[in-house]
Image 1 (cartoon, rainbow, N blue to C red):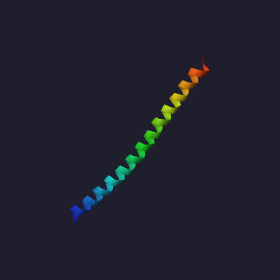
Image 2 (tube, helix red, strand yellow):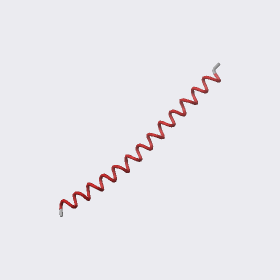
Image 3 (cartoon, one colour):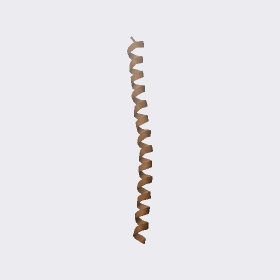
Image 4 (cartoon, helix red, strand yellow):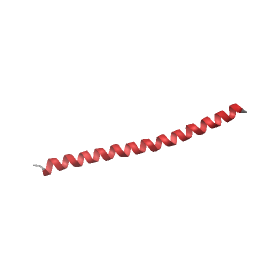
Length: 51
């Protein structure tokens, strides 16, 4: 019986880890996209308005 409870707890930990990783990865992807957009806007600004 102890081994069954161990596997249930291990499964719960794996599910929680996957959920947390999804949230962290989606946040990182959003951050990278925003940094790219800001870099493109800065490039356009300096290219067209600083000449």
